[in-house]
Length: 469
Ligand code: FAD
Ligand code: SF4
Ligand code: SF4
Image 1 (cartoon, rainbow, N blue to C red):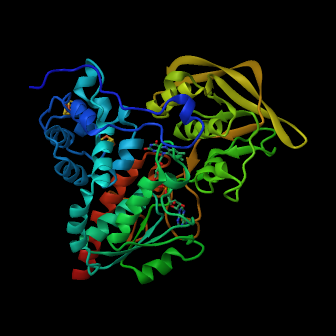
Image 2: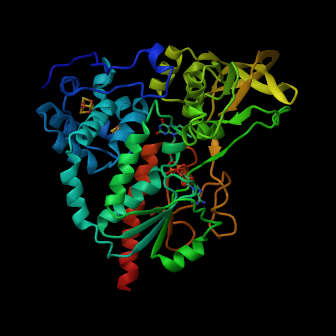
Image 3: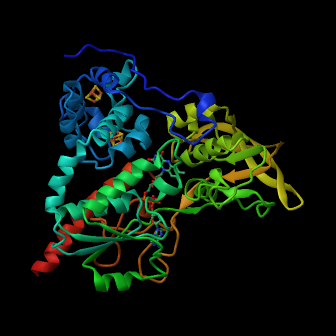
């Protein structure tokens, strides 16, 4: 039995004063030696018991791949991870590990949990940099005949990309229809470079290309082409259109200039590289004081991006610190970088001058003991107000699916706009499957990927049955 070591081997990070001047990645990841040292902390719980495996939504054999790191056999570690997750360089960086695999780790009960996410990222990064993926990819390529049938995938986010990759490996010919001019979904337009360098995503897209997956960008399904048209051309369709429509605040002043939804703000920065203006065409002017409303990952990404554009940033949240839903690491980084937090404040009005926002008026809230259905403490208004000056306001209070895909198609939806699916992820239209945020609302990358993988299996079964009947 390995010795219990309570403290984690930390991963190197770029110093605050350096990293806040650019959009380069903050966490530098483990070196080989550090990864082996951290791997030695794993107690190697038996596979049928290991709580970390149960905590991972796609049930990666975590003790299995960590044991291989300890042996220095990174190719075998990668093979074990790829059995359940083909995008470990991404999930290792963005999964909310503290609520999933690491939240369940037994070492975490007496000390710091094994750093599973960073070890997963290490395996993926090491394999990519040392050409280890190549052999595995060649094995996959051999299976990619494209002869089993044709499938259309709508949306090139983690759900669509995973579904496409799995189907291609099974032997299907897959075409992805993506509305934007670049594939990746939130991974390309939402999550900034300092958390997920775009070269990682580009590498994953190149792998899909090698598996024969075709990606058609600038294709809005529901406008450019309809679901019915896709069903005429393909044996099955998978919808992974996400939840990209921002929720806004219906309060006075909402139409003032320089009030952005976080999605618009982040898209301008990540997809259109507004921070590199005039080298890129899209400028962004935010002034000196930025208020971000909300406290999820989107809020944290918007706040840290605004900070890198030179602003002083305040995150304003209607609940308390214990209910902040962003990944723990992002909150720590945001605080280190100088983002300020205001808790128990609810915006009630945006105040303006010459058509531009100049301040936000908040009502102070009071926490109650009682919790709501999500386990968060309920709050109530106090009748007391506070005003905060702002040159720019970014609203990050949640997202919902857009209706382009469901309007007029006969696809059944739930009251929150998510698509209705059965236990095989089939929608109300025969042969049309769906997964990711389009069926869950705002969720996580790994849940979207898990859906993509499950749907690929269901599509395979559906097409085989159809062909044999
Ligand atoms: P998406 O990633 O939204 O992809 C959907 C794709 O479909 C998009 O490319 C879109 O353009 C395309 N599309 C939409 N409609 C159509 C149409 N009609 N025709 C063709 N294409 C269409 N999760 C984490 O696990 N960790 C994080 O750290 C994290 N941070 C986040 C930060 C931000 C800023 C945001 C917004 C979300 C974050 N999330 C995070 C959530 C996570 O990114 C999503 O749960 C995940 O991306 C959902 O994947 P998806 O494939 O279902 O949808
Ligand atoms: Fe943990 Fe996410 Fe990797 Fe699963 S996919 S082991 S939850 S980091
Ligand atoms: Fe290792 Fe923790 Fe998983 Fe046990 S629960 S196998 S110690 S990572």
